[in-house]
Length: 270
Image (cartoon, rainbow, N blue to C red; front, side, top):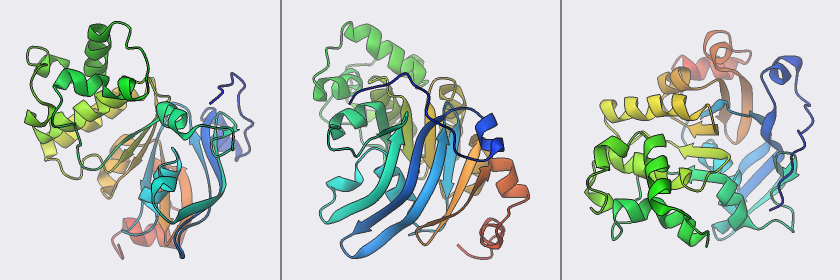
């Protein structure tokens, strides 16, 4: 995938433009699983080095949306989509674009921690580089840097030879984040990364998000509206495959423009 230094054109309202450049953008994005339509014309800007939370009830298209952002939707048999997904102004679904390279720049952390159980902590961090056939250069330095970024280095630096699956759930999730960060992505997608974690581990992940925001554009799907309010700069509310509302997180939770948004965040449905 060719990269460009050109800034994409801003096409949103003045408030959004003032927040910073668009790193990604979807335009009229529609997605299907067979005959079932999961997304219905979603146009959404994602701003550089900001955290965007995607909220909404189960089955509203949240996970499908972020899987479209790094072309993981298309690996599902019978899945298809229409519309455009732009990264720095380039359509990642253009025929000339290699989806493997897209996932190099737009990394994903899943709901359930998934370290490779037969690999050591160290090899888990380096796994993405090797799968992408990238020379790790100084492997030790890369491992340390990624684990430090994931706030895990001090906990595992003396036991890097242990299996990644020997760690606690929260540590495993941070290991998966480190594995993603070792590839030096530009965008980090997180699909309910704290749903299987206890409150202490969740707090560590949320603290980590604030630190990572200085370097990465982050999109997080969450069922936890308090979490969205704590970590996100922007929030998009999805319902039945549609983007109902997208705004600054504070506005979404204190003065939503749409009645459906207000009903959801106040617990009237969901």
